[in-house]
Image (cartoon, rainbow, N blue to C red; front, side, top):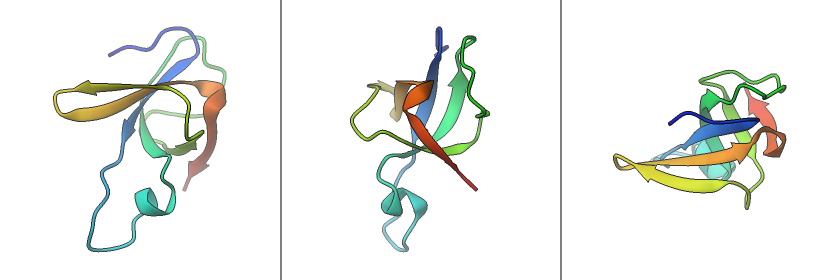
Length: 79
């Protein structure tokens, strides 16, 4: 899966039930998998990000959930 233009591909994090995780605290939380060639944001592959909740297109590949989103819909990078 390779993003075009300024799109970014995010992998939705799975929520652990035993402890409070970042995925539970931030429902719109994912890991950056790939960045399109026209993206001008300061994000990198493997960054953990928070994105606008109702943006992007969901894609399921090999039992993993991915989201294709415009880079401007990424709100923050988590440390």
